[in-house]
Length: 361
Ligand code: TRP
Image (cartoon, rainbow, N blue to C red; front, top):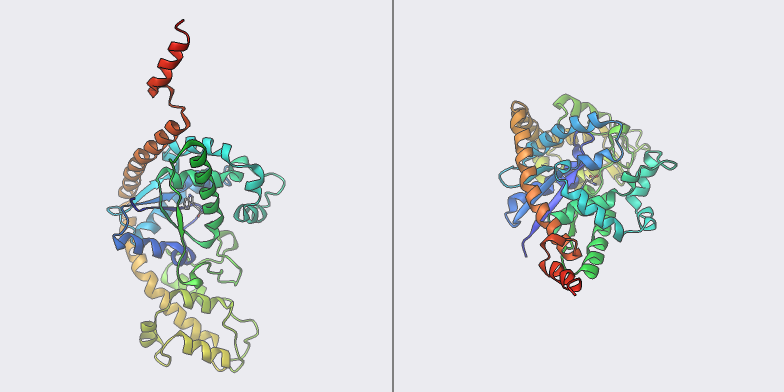
């Protein structure tokens, strides 16, 4: 069986270092590993509209931001198909049939949807489209017969939902859809980077993100203002590394070689952590190191972005071509689905002949 990747992001803002550590960096590595037959990366604008119906312009503007972030991180249109979700109408048709296989109570139990409803104060008035987006996400994944879905931890419930739909569909209508596997980052620190303010998640609305497209100075300022251990008041105080955002970012981003380059008093992160825990190591020193680490990661991304920004029409052309190619694949899956469901009346000569016979007497 071929190995196919599908993953994507909602275009509601520029992508940040949480996206990069959690998924983007891994995708580029998977792309370059050469072991996948096909890689589809989706800009999920239709899903973004499920909770932004009144801000279509925000979604529209962020499509190019996300595409630029993708390209500057090293996703290569020669190797990966970049597409825009709304340009594949087959996904809506698939969703409509999948909706019959999912109960309302099952959707209500989805932990990601639950917490998003809370975050958006949707409790009293959840848009139906938003409530059902896990079903539409199952359509995204199955339309491309994806075997592997590299995502962040918050997407696990979506993958569970997709697998249930696949199993149910195949058991009712016969083997048609492919059950996908989730791929999480190996490095646990990468599962969810906290905001620079120490809040559980980086989020545009909380204004606590470091963006891939931030300037060098913006990154430096953000790093130097980061929340650390609130009880580490004096340099001599023992500090805590668990739950300390500065150390979580280092866990996600620093490599031993970076110590030799920027902080040669320590051989690796373990030594730095031990000193911090014992006391006698100031936050400023650690933050300066983190800044160097992040700049090393981000500066090639920033440079590449500058290049692509000079040719925006080419970026749209990449998305247009990717969407066309993706549509062909999704259309084949939709046709398989309709055949399995036997709603392919006009292609079904046996059906027509049988009905004719029934009325022939
Ligand atoms: N729900 C994902 C997010 O919020 C975006 C997304 C849409 C997606 N469709 C997908 C991710 C399919 C993986 C596979 O980031």
